[in-house]
Length: 266
Ligand SMILES: [Zn+2]
Image (tube, rainbow, N blue to C red; front, side):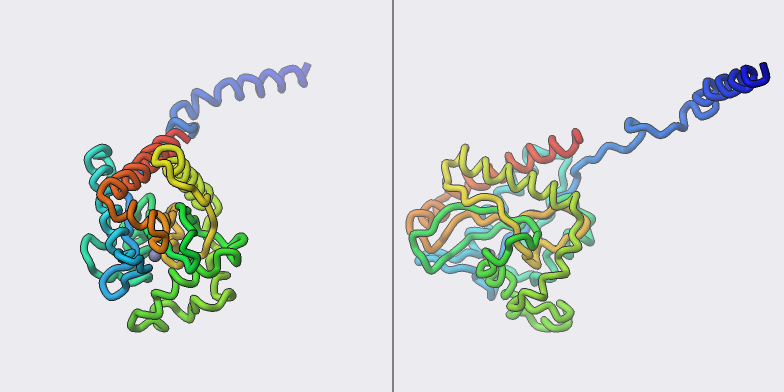
């Protein structure tokens, strides 16, 4: 009989919990939903650093034109998203400053836009990188090339605390990037490469990982887009054309829009 009473007391206590804690039991609907409010767009290189050189073009100019178009499309179509550029002209923000602009502004996303080149003139196609060290040795040439811009900067030793772009051991620090941000970065990178391939008809060389210093944004997802090879005559011609730039920029814009919708649901 006593046991029965205990059970009854316990039962009424359990039933009463929702009344005591009514509005205070945390649930998913009470968590503020994630909103992508701020994006940093980074046109690679600039100023004294031209980046890769095509026969008629400089990487820094192609990167800037496409980046400004991506920003324009975002501003026109996603008024709730603030766009911050690391450069809007032919200036030279350091590789150290670029992700810092994103980190200081507490941005939700960082997109760095570049153009490729290779000794093999027949190489062409797009590729999108996320921060990572997995199999990066295979891409070490491009990783080293992009990171070596650092050596053009004054106070390089001071700002990068001993980071040596030419030494593979230096890249171990990048393993600290959060897994969740890498997954979100991969989601965006997949959208971008799919858009380039299916909507613009480019050859996609795929989504890859690389420890690019400029992607060092430990508090947000980040990607580095390579629009194509300036060393390839056909691809250079396409990227130099206004139509080519608009196609590439709108593909990146649509990817960001799809990414935003996806992460805001989850
Ligand atoms: Zn570049």
